[in-house]
Picture (tube, one colour):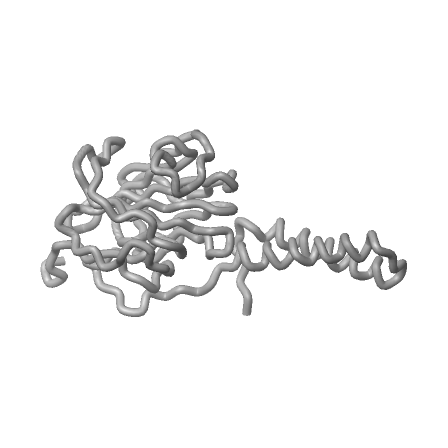
Length: 224
């Protein structure tokens, strides 16, 4: 059964109602304008049903050292970079671009405590632009793992996305794979990892939230 995310339930319901109303009107009073309106509303309804879908995604083989993919999309960046907002050190940056056709639910890549959360107003550059990570509308989330490792997740609005939704707050406990947010209509998620993490994905790879593993932290699960 198709599950629609709460962020798009109203939009999707309105799209379905409009389509049904136009279908009835077209049946009763057939003319070219109603037919064109029906086709347009049908395309919009189909887009909403696809965009706001919220598939059930249990993690297939969970362990406390793995960093799970937080979003569906394409890996567009894997590089070492200096994270200057919170952690102030060089880290691995993995960026996932979400097209409007991808599932846009954002999930926690690890279990831990939210130690930092901040929303930033900003521009709406295309999500793959190098400066979108620092210049666009975005949120920054730091999750403290029980091993002491700290992971930073950044939700970034793209050129079309105009609303970032986050469902977490500081000091909150989150579980790996738990929903932490949603971004509307094309966007990007950056994950910053310690340099000793073992990266498990490649640039250009298509990934799926909770299905793919981004990396393994350099910790022993027997010590947790």
